Image (cartoon, rainbow, N blue to C red; front, side, top):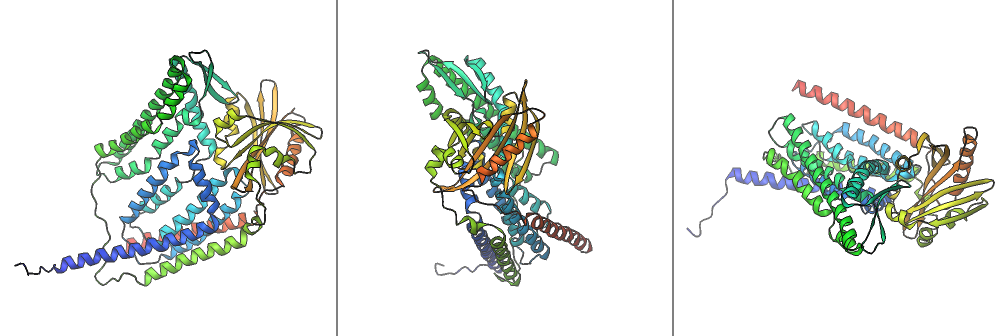
Length: 556
């Protein structure tokens, strides 16, 4: 009995063989997919990755800390539940070639639209990743799966700062008003920022800015960042589509309400402690009671509700292979060669079209000098005869989270200008002028943008009472000893209906002169043909592939 050997049945041996072969093929697929994407990222997206990581430290973008892992986990779960096919889809391959061209065109235009460079560069690398994933992991029986993959990947593109500022402005005023009315503070709006004034027991006036992280927008966006996980859990339930949608909305709404209430109570308690105990005790409470507490409660409620109301149905992972199938077959080798070909095409076109070689010849600026006295770098190195006075604004800089914010008074030729200069490690730090001006009571009569010699300049004609002004601003990227830093230059000048065009031309010439020194030049000569060619190839191949596969299923 003790020496008896129990032999597994044939079915058991085959099942084990299926699993081991499937796991091996999955490991091979994962390895060369990650290798190809990592190689492309190291060559062309190192700055993008650095800027993306820096953006995670911006309070307004901290929702990405939640969204990125949640999205990647759901994406991995979706892919792992589908059968790996050893067939190369020629339609997906041709579409991916077009996708590579689109991705490169976005990288090219990102050098011009510096204010939105992170969004464009992130979208570029996501396009490459999306096409490689769809090419490697084969055809999906359900058309909703590739659509879900694209939606999940696109959520990783950071929202434009203007959108976040707008949402924050909608939160800031009610949060500040309710907190001030309950705790007894004075609500003040100045230069587009909201703060609450209150006195401590010693009679000292204290000021509390209602920054984006205090407005509740961070917690709100963090709750919305759980949408991929909640939607995935609900999709695996057997309940009706209408009930699934209702549970999804209920879960997210409950989480958002908890986050809003927790943020409101936190601000009220800070004001109450300041008034009745001390400012120091209030700050200690503020820092020792982080928003992660109520944000965690909101997250737990958001995830718990779909699990309770629509429990997911267990499903089997479809990873079987036939008994005759080997670990690596001809189709798998074709896919590997296709991915290598895509990476080679991207690297070749990138080396030909992108101005990386020119940028490497630039001597990096001293980062400390640019941060402490940016006006010296920006103004003293131009050919313009500029007389200026710069005033540090640390409180505004603290509210914005920028490295430096200085107000400016300029005399250039016969022009007297006012303005601002800001320095940040990522464009995500810069506030939106549209939201800021509206908050200050200005009416924007006209807004437009122009790109001249690779520099994009934004203009606005604004009015407040009888005062009418012209705003012109641009964002420039400077290579420094601590990596790329971004400088936002904003200039204001009073105008009349008769002279605003002349003054806009004057501001354009000034900003172009400022942008000529130290910045990395951008090449846009091939942007339009590359974008159009890529779109044509991708749309034509995708449409043809969908029609062909639909007819093939009908004939089966």
